[in-house]
Image: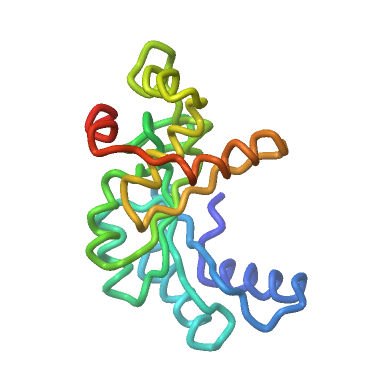
Amino acid sequence: MPFNTPENLRTSIENNLRTLRQEQVQLVHLRLMGGRGGVPLAEQLGAMYDMQRAGKIQHVGVSNVTPEELTQALALGEVASVKNMYGYARRTTLRDGHGKTQGGEEVLPLCEQHGILLVPFFSLVHGLPKAGNKLAELAKQRGIIEAQLNLAWLLHKSPLLLPIPGTSSLVHLRENLAAATIELSAEEMAFLG
């Protein structure tokens, strides 16, 4: 059952504040689930913006949104960031056993228009294509791994992209950090598409 009623959202924030021993949560993303369990987006976001006005949330973000849902959210209040699945090979909406996970490519223009950060998640887990593709080819030419090139591609795609690759490995953390230093030419970006 989705945890998305205004009451559930308020309780969750209050619990987080108690657990963290804070008076305010800096950023909270409202994750939209397919169908939203009958709770209108305006009610969900209304609860978030009410908690923001009460000083319990500093910034409100949304996650897993379509361009239409982001437009609706912007009509209700300020949106600090959007978290959608996005990577080199996973640019658009993904349909899986849990419904639809919205992609980043669809909302990026709207984010850029409004100066909203787009935070791609699972860009490495679901974002690396099979061998024999342009990403693998260019990574081999550059002497880097595909995961690094995926992150570099995201960082070059827009200054408003802030990837969160995530890792539990120190080796992968170092590889991910090194991706920020990779410069891609306009020709390489065009080659990758």
